Figure (cartoon, rainbow, N blue to C red):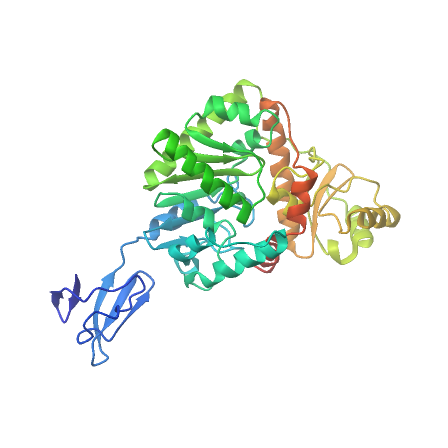
Length: 407
Ligand SMILES: [Zn+2]
């Protein structure tokens, strides 16, 4: 029902995008335009004839994004959220932070178009495949200007109105640990655990199969999906349920970690900043270290433990004595400059912008917190070299890195 000329009138059936289907009478409606949360209906005289409210209320997902966008849950542009109805899934665009998400930045993606992804034959080569998926996703956008998150097709797969995906420190203390799978099965029998799977297309295809299998076995979908060396997806029809599932999961993990004497609190060294050391880092790493961000010493994790950490801090910190020779060797061996430098009892995030330097330090601290918690589950487990290679050569993630750097 829409209000047309002050009267409540039934308009001809509109399709999901507000266009009048071929068969409908065109006498009353010339054109209907979807605009944010409203459907604007124009009469044949060109005047605005009515405004209809769309079914989906997107304020709730914005609230959830802010609520689960704090540093205990995500860093930088990590994590993503979505809301959906039968035809559209609205997702956080790539490169945007959960905390900074606003209604007008959400990207609406056609669900029937995403569904085509599952029927399409894809190239065997990883890079070609991700590019094809990216193009398909770009064409599926029906609202908004951003590029949908690479995890958007996965959001479509969950049969629930809201999905909130984070890299919560407490959860990753378990997912980045040697006994993570076993602990997850014992602590969260209602959750679906998945071993590390490359993000993007492979992850969404594989998880879709597993959710279907879970549904066939249990008669319902899992309350959460917990991914090794990655994070957690929580799916539910109401914001309240999302909060409850997160609350229970994090509460239980905190209990187990506390009992094991493991805490996420980092005790930072007291060494003061040193202008000489900062000058030396800049001298040895040049433009790559144009900006610095530092804190007192903490135990830096020696290898990558999840895709975000790899993306923002590189695989390993620079811990040698700072010299031009050692800096050149690091770059020659790895093909890139470090993003984290440990020197004189301080840890430095380095970057081409202040934001990137801050993020590198924040992610290095995040990894150290995760490593402390992982001791409750048998100790830290790094990503495999193969998994690392995939991320390092992945253009999609570079896109995010670029956007984060610019924002
Ligand atoms: Zn993620």
